[in-house]
Length: 160
Image (cartoon, rainbow, N blue to C red):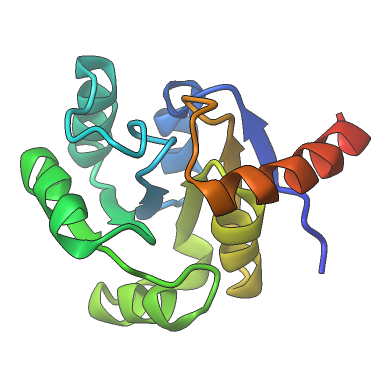
């Protein structure tokens, strides 16, 4: 499988929502930890809240997905007015399929955004969904993520 993301951006805020709308995107499946906030925060920056509001204003759903526990992700989603799927077991396809079915979405109208190749991007690619890799907000990661980041960084360096 090609591990390389369709696009790379420095931050979620660099993702052009107007362009996504022009491309027919109806839903954004967005990772939480190190994409929206660090893995230990519950507060989303005002800039990212405004980005999500703009997506909603453009008629796009923003759906949060995370391997983190459900309660934490739901608190963040409630604050943002988004659907949430915690403990999603990315990159496995089950949660992605659930999201598509529940929201009556076609794959070509969905994009996934996240900061990890082996969970976010691999999960999206396995489902044949468009995807954007964003650089992690923080270098602080939980133990097993630190290990996978070393391999991910090698893959990304080869392509940059």
